[in-house]
Image (cartoon, rainbow over all chains, first blue to last red; front, side, top):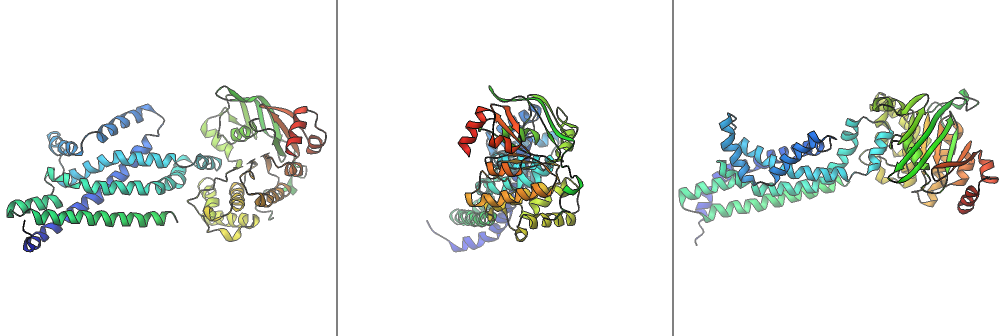
Length: 216
Length: 261
């Protein structure tokens, strides 16, 4: 096996394009999964089976089917119903939706971990329900779950190459395209492998710094 | 203590008169366990009533019913002529404005500063402007001796300090009724006296009606107009503290007092 530095430098412009797309997927996908997961978690507390049952079924279904199948479904089946998005948008929606079914469980645990005394104090002060959630319960719950949410971001990073299957040219997509055109596989795949490690490492550092700040 | 912060006792020299709280035939069960059994009692405005008795006798349950943290299985509860039970949640919200509570575990909001713990409800519930609420909070913090702790977070305070903030937070809503649920039970022994002294001051210098569950019998003797002895969900003896503590009529009261005094 020969290592060819010129292949690395030839690949780099494509690598930067792919890195940008990977980071877009990661940032937007995380945002979707954080927001949607919170919505699911809150709706699951509505005291009505008409709300909790359908959401329970749908999120259970999404959590227990492969992300790759969901990507194909959104990319190939939705257009038949005249719903079309770009490949990148479809990918972000799919990965965000998929991970929201995990983050909802993280939020649920965080909300349940807020001591019942906090609810009681809010009642004793006559705070409206909405204010109790936004000012008392959620700030405490979210602070508790930041580490767990961060782990899902790192997990999501490792799932971003799946979007290659629906034509999104993220890092792996760029590497594969370059390899097929130049018959040089080792260098581009190694470069993106290293890139994944570096991003994970930086993300975990950022996460630890954030945790320290939240603990005061 | 500053008298413009709180209702003024001078305006009601009798410190009594109209009935403020009434429980009628109130029953509360937890599963098979009947905690309150067909209970009747009333408290006049401005009175300080202490509930004593062995644990599990239903004292705390009464405070939690009045704060609507629990619902009675049967019976009616009235505060200042308005129904608390049975009533709609909307009606309860109105009645609840007159009731404040201080908890055994303080239950301050750890995500807020001391000042914001106190201003949060006056702003969002009573509609005070932020400046008014802050002014009120600062007066109360001065009163409880923590004027310099506005920007601290609860975790940075001792238990005794946290409980003083919790008392200030309850008073900031200017309640007619203050419920005190074993407010010194979670404190280190050396911090108990300070909190009790503060409550004595409040009892002396305001006309707030106080319902107090406590195991501090000296405190109960000092502040109470009336002491209710509970056993198995019933009031077995009631009267002024001099009588209950000196010449109790009921055997159970005597046993209980000799065990705790």
